[in-house]
Amino acid sequence: MGRARLDELKAGTPIPYGGDRLARVSEALAAAFRPGDRLIVVQETGDLLHVPADVHVQAAEAVGQAAAAFEALQRVDHGQISAFFGAFARRLESDDGWAPIAAANAADVARARSLGRSTTRLVASQRMRADMVAGLRQWRDAPAPDGRVAERIEHEGWSIEQVISPLGVVGFVFEGRPNVFADAAGVIRGRNTAVFRIGSDALGTARAIAEHAMKPALYAAGLPLGAAVLLDNPERAAGWALLSDRRLSLAVARGSGPAVAQLGAVARQAGVPASLHGTGGAWMIALDGVDPDRFRAAVLASLDRKVCNTLNVCCLVGGASLMEPFLSALKEAGERRGHGCKLHVVSGYEQLPLDWTSATTRVRRADGDHDEALVERLDEVSLGTEWEWEETPEVTLVVARDLEEAVALFNRHSPQFIISLIADHAAAHDYVWANANANFVGDGMTRWVDGQYALDRPELGLSNWQHGRLLARGGVLSGESVYTIRTRMRQADPDLHR
Image 1: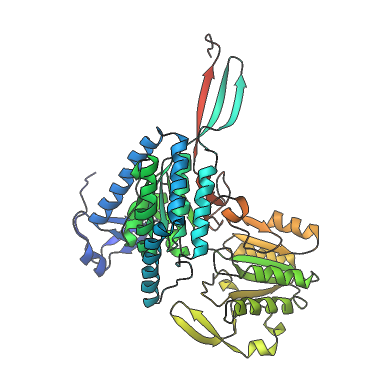
Image 2 (image 1 turned 90 degrees about the vertical axis):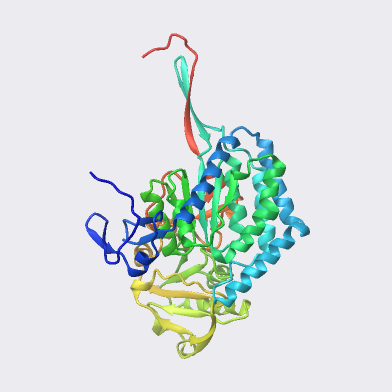
């Protein structure tokens, strides 16, 4: 079979994908492609992804630094790793260390706003700063996972140990959230190394964190600087190049659902295991007859801000007695943020008060404020829509005949992520636990789904089951869950043979 390098693309050229389908090269792609560039054909979708040669080289060099650092990191002691996290935390806590980071973040926020982009997760607030410091100190004080014996099997004259060991280089592609940069450094606790590519909105902040906190902390602790590398490139192609590098032991992607799905597909077809954290949105089911104050409190606590574990769909079983506390909580959630609220209704529209169905509301979007209908009808097929609201809480409402229908709707339309049941009967909770295909199941507010809040571990991301259940791990990805198992044999009987 003849082989040649791809030096050019011609518009209209058919490119096979998925075994039996064709994509065609666009005129823009053909014009942009140069010798040395790379073309990634996403087999799941037919997307043709162009990686310029210089971007590929930059990503490959970053992974090479991390791979070399991984070898060196196996020879340092755990005290040095603890010292790194302590020094990183002190630099973020210090006003002198934080000042250039805050300045860079202010510039990032101003730029994003000028482009009409969301800034709700971009602002490096004092709360975010405190959370980063607390998370780094948790890693400083955490026991080292590597070397721990997970299982020991005794045989006559010999034994087997299953030993937790470092995994390798972890590639991260993140959206514009500065705090994940510090959270993801947690993989170093287990002697892994990391390459970070962060979204363009937060790249200036990431540069400042790396320059004024992370790198100095690595140097002070005597760790290789390649243990945590920032891939300093705002192009999306840098993410594709990074996650298609076969030297990665794990690819982690966080961001919008479609972007994360595409990144996961790129990694998987390169043979790199992927941990994806994209589509979010929690569901809450409430049964008629439950304490209305308890239900109202759960809704309100689930709408304090927009993140992946925010309440997105509320399903009322029966509905009549629960409508008022639900609407009251939604309205108060908006008032607490100084704004109104927005409701999408799949079924149960006729149960809404007239002053809701006839009203308008001012909705704050990334590109500014808009006057919209307070309530809009929604088709059932759109139940999976995640509302990415800014300051105006936005929720979908659906009324189900019974619990069985409610769970069926969740399984059919949700990202199979978070479900909360507000009910008084143990049998109902048992039914949801057994039948809802959810990674996280609760009986109150949805916002508990957070590694640092629930498990006292800074998280790298939360996984849904949209693309299937996870193999041998939970949905909270943290630094300590990035490992492999090595098997060690110890022979006591010198005459052992088979």
